[in-house]
Image (cartoon, rainbow, N blue to C red; front, side, top):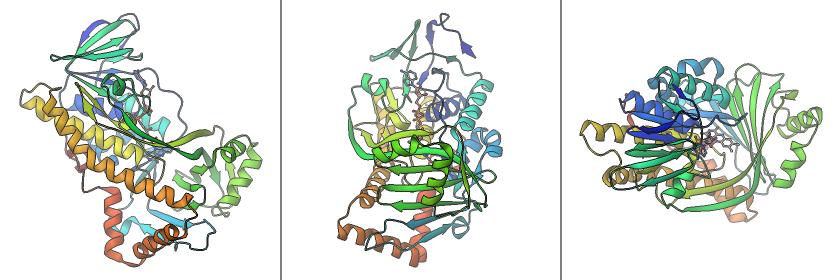
Amino acid sequence: MALRDGAQGSMTAEVAVVGGGPAGLVSAIALKAAGVDVLLVAPSPAEDHRTTALLAGSVTALTTLGVWEACRPHAAPLASIRIVDDTQRLLRAPEVVFNAAEIGLDAFGYNIENRHLLAALYAHAWRLSIPHVESAAVAIASDSDGASVKLADGTARVRLVVGADGQRSLCRAAAGIGTDRRAYPQTALTLNLAHDRPHHDAATEFHTRSGPFTLVPLPGRRSSLVCVLDPAHAAELAAMEDAELSAEIERRAHSLFGKMRVEARRGVFPLAIETAHAFARGRIALVGEAAHVVPPIGAQGLNLGLRDAASLAEIVADARRQNCDLGAPAILARYDAERRADATSRRIAIDWLNRSLLTDFLPVQGVRGLSLYLVDRIGPLRRALMREGVAPAASQPRLMRGEMV
Ligand SMILES: Cc1cc2nc3c(=O)[nH]c(=O)nc-3n(C[C@H](O)[C@H](O)[C@H](O)COP(=O)(O)OP(=O)(O)OC[C@H]3O[C@@H](n4cnc5c(N)ncnc54)[C@H](O)[C@@H]3O)c2cc1C
């Protein structure tokens, strides 16, 4: 149910979700499915031509919420992941291939264009009749009884605010939560492309001296590309004509899938790593990139964000069953504690891997090469790593296990 601009006035709900990206929409849907009176405050999302590799836990959560059926026709399975050291350095890592079948899965997850994922989530939120204010929150203030979300024309009074408003989060600022942020000297160029040879449901990550160059399958003979470069090279490639860029991408991909043809629309994303000092404070709980930003290595960003959404919905639903105040400090403390280990371990691993690609320091190259060698050779280690990548031991909220919140 969309509330027209100018018709908002004064509203009440138990929870307001601020932000209509994937983390916010999954939060709103999961809360509503648990019987929570939830309001979505979200302007129309900007065009996003990226794709997201959703790992198995995220796919299970979307299936449990009834969203995956609409996504599946647009998604390609990731049956294997191949890592190729393309750094041309003295010490290079061996090529490693991870097969989902080794850990008893058909696929590690599925890759889908964000526009299809968002369309499926919005359609489901609509089916659930989640009230939707289609404009941005202007200000948020909390007190001992609740929180007020100031809208363009009116105010929503709630017990809890879910801050799902992305990297430059108003909710995070309103809660007085700072961040640790470090910009990398890297930019990701993203695009989708068609190719002559089949990808056989395999994702391929070339590790280059400027960062990963990753091809991820889409349905048919199409793939999405995330090419991490220094900013000047990224701008140079982004400005190329289609034919020139297609040839350049094919060269960088070592003609893996034969002739390549880039599709219209390219994205350019300066990379950074950022973590909020707290995930919740003062009746505001942060999910998705409002809480943590990681570079696109190993498809972790939104998968972390969806685990935030699932954990928070579970904690709020439990609190509601016990007639607790949904924004009480104890509820927020539990959420913060549950999410910290997962987000911290991913941040450390991704940061280390990314920096190990950028450095010319030989011992670091050696450690990276040795790590991949051991992973390649030692079966139990390799399977443990695959399981941890798909379903982290530190965080398995009910939705990720196929149970409703
Ligand atoms: C190149 C690249 C590739 C990636 N690939 C993957 C991948 O394969 N797998 C993966 O898991 N992750 C991936 N990620 C990460 C993933 O894209 C992000 O984690 C995800 O998009 C974040 O979703 P979100 O909902 O938290 O934030 P966003 O998508 O940024 O949504 C935030 C929303 O909040 C809204 N908003 C902002 N301010 C307000 C306000 N005041 N009031 C109301 N609404 C507001 C915005 O309009 C926006 O719609 C990738 C990232 C990049 C850069």
